[in-house]
Image (cartoon, rainbow, N blue to C red; front, side):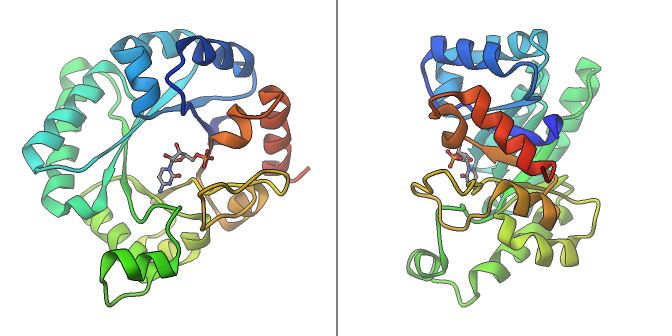
Length: 237
Ligand code: C5P
């Protein structure tokens, strides 16, 4: 389970990142770098995390014209990102060119291509919010499945979605398509702004390949203990 728990480093405090990475080293295999951590660490993050035994998920949710996203994703690949995401709503062409760019950059650098994910609908949005904000005729889950199929058609490896949508995505996209789920809240943690949530155990039981957890770990009084409890839950203990 160590390699299926991704800790979201949602902080721009370099000392805190340093402390968390030292503290969680033995039990966590992945860190997720969003804009905050990236602004604190920059490209130096990649060799630094690698030396410390971590894999890095670059969560910058790229969403732009195909040429720009292809360059962004190629650059992150070259520097050693292990997982990169982009908004599936950026469209088929954007995702295809990003996929090609990651492939080329990895080939040139002689490194494995990073896992590429499409972000479906953010886990902070519920059905009401979806209807209010998106003006779509579809239900939220149908839109998530639609975007997952689009990401798959573009050649991406998987999607970011809520654990509540795993079953319909699996049905539409099959077992080899990765599903990475934020929106994870143990019973003892505050949901905050997250809406489409489950516990860590439920996400694993539903078939999540990776789960992403931020505040329940990084804002815990004892992050090591919190991560340990989450891993126990994932293991069904
Ligand atoms: O603190 P929390 O566990 O809610 O953090 C979840 C992380 O996953 C955040 O970094 C957030 O940006 C990210 N995320 C998400 N929902 C998505 C995609 C990414 O919550 N659909």
